[in-house]
Image (cartoon, rainbow, N blue to C red; front, side, top):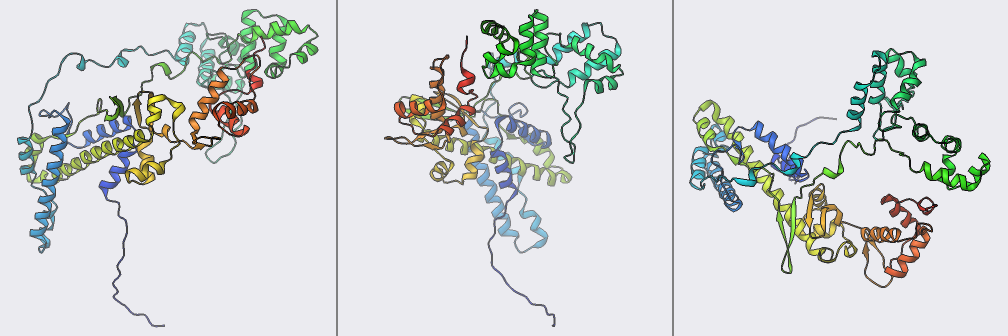
Length: 503
């Protein structure tokens, strides 16, 4: 078979991801905090990029800024088109076609700038969140007690290893876990920690018992029974109470009190009284020493929904986000240097791409939020019970974007509404069928289940099947029992047998 060379022409289409498009997609899916970090990195790496804090000639007014950016982009594109038309036939001048007369570009920008503004008063003060006292975490609290104790050096080393192996609940976690290749690592023991700390393994239980009596009492326990036992010993529990903690916690969980009375050979009333005292103990030692204080967590919304007369208006929240500009003074000085001109031209182009991508991100978020507001007006007026079923496709078809784009826009973006602060993804719910009415959102069904359980008789709580009947009779919502169980678990609500109040 002979070999030959042929010249063929082929016409095809393909999608090419330009650097600008890749950057725009990446910025679109960033949260507000991630965007701030990204802008900081760009400010550090691009000398001609500046914000309000660094640009000595920062302009005021979002309208002036957006108009200036639009006019500059048009001027930039026209310059590039003119250069390409002029130098198309000369390969030696092809490099010039990619360049922009940045000196003229920056000179024109200066003519559009307004005088800098200096604001004073309360706006310059730091937010109140920065003046809050940081709560003490469990590890710091225990370290302080360890420093105040009279442990010798090897006991102190052992205690440090114990504190370093506490989990988020305050229990001593000695599970080995898995290795790099997925192999099972053997679990540790307190004797292993003692050998590593240079402590006699026979002394490990005694030192651990002393640590477990630190505040909060029961910390560093290896299981629930040990945690409650330590607290019972400190509080002086009697023999029946300690026996229940040691051997019958499973019966307490099941409310099987007659079995406890029969095993311990004591009256049922005495078991009731003992269980009441045990229930007062703390099962999670680290409850008041969480690493993150949920009370001080503040979420800054990306957009606001404000009701103006009978119309809901969507506005973006630019507070805390840097407004980016070109540092004209530095750029003009460096453009005069032939050696730095090519470098600065590239940085100027990169700065323009970033400013344009951030502005496009802002417009896209507002556009998607406006569509959500239009579809969820009843929710904004009356509350979560009127949340309508909605999927990504509903918004994508309305705004003319792909579903993946809508998913990126709504991830980790928050909106402040008259009903509270919500993530944009909150408004996307599957539909639940109603008997003689339009479908209802799954989130509304969850809230309906929660209200039923809150209003129930605690001594005789509703079963999942009873909740199914109530939903159908009162709200016309027809769902299966397993669906109620699934939603109840998502709301972190126990089953009826565990919700029952015995005392």
